[in-house]
Length: 294
Ligand SMILES: [Zn+2]
Image (cartoon, rainbow, N blue to C red):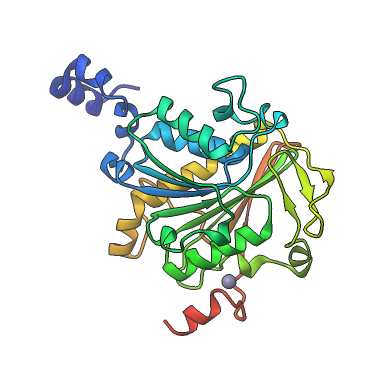
């Protein structure tokens, strides 16, 4: 596509300078501000298959800093869908966060990374406040709700993702949007029953009583890359558009509105996406207190 904008760029920049800037093509997107991206800090909870895709995308986009939390080690069954784990052959048994950190440095040395080999409830809560956006890419409700709780409390955008076979979902939470539900609002009693079950990135369910593996969840990289891609797009929307929202009470249409209060579902079997409007629970113990006092 050519037009006035392209002609103007050529006159001002020249061909050489256009291609010497690795972020040039994304800077051409209307509403883009690379300085916002390069100064942003994103917390990523869980760097399994979806987390790999999310981190890879944001790394290449030139995000300023990652705070990455994951205590899992790499197993061979991770390697069919985790792009950041394939940099060398003998990575089995190493911490996921350590290998992700090495891969990020190779992909884009501009990006700063700090990693924590801890369970989420063991981290310093100040890490939440240091983040511009928080993302969960985990397979257990307990960690999701913990991140939701702190993100809501500190007023930081939170984006949750989930996958299962050919299906995936994304939901964003931002407590500064009036009457927007949080993740807790949509949690059913059945979900709460599952809260104490944890699933590793290898798809193995871990019994919280004795740590024994009882079953595996099927996943495929085509699903995780789609969901991780959409999640990274949501992160960019918040980073580029949050100032505009705070100043004007609405989102700049050039960048678009994040999925706040909505759940985007992907169905790889029917080739369809749909978006469900989530309802706020007036009795939600996470978000009803703050809203009723604001
Ligand atoms: Zn809620």
